[in-house]
Image 1 (cartoon, one colour):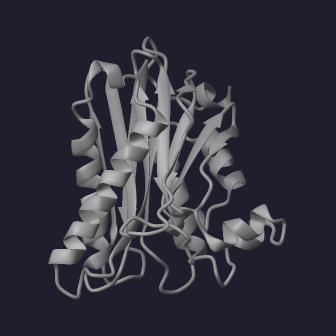
Image 2 (cartoon, one colour; image 1 turned 120 degrees about the horizontal axis):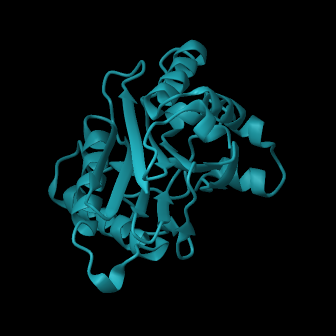
Length: 263
């Protein structure tokens, strides 16, 4: 099993990019994490960087007993990141005392052909299979609670006045909610993952994600199409936006083509 990946991060119309993303790979394992910081005065980018650095350091040397990585193990890594943010808040100055970050984390075990993920806040993971969404994280937000209670439609949620109100974020001592996949997810060739901050998915709906995935020859081309959509439709002063794309391909066919993903 081979992976083809791509990433992007864009400052948008903000003075500072407070998103952070990174990945790490060994012969067997692959991890990627996307974080969206908040707090102002540099606190947001500090929190996001802490998340990325902590998670990758935490997962880099898993024991044999911890393989394949599960959603529960990834929750532990994000919880560790939360502890490190709290420590930095306590010893830092006013610029970082209120810093927070959302995050989503994906782990892939090539040997077992499994994936797992965990998240906190409204940075999302999508898994596309056969041109359709087969898995998606659920936002920790007020608007998501309204959607779940059928008080609001999913399309309305994208631009609701309370869309940015979170009920959980890293950098919180109480009421922290980090959600992970129950166990692992069996991978198939042609599966495609998208991890993205709200600065992207607010302006790119799932229908457009699926359509452009089918048309894209590479993960880079897919992300370029999504970014172009954000730039064409976003309002003034729109947020930073970041994403990682991960495509699963047969080990004997690493040429990513449109036919490969149309299933």
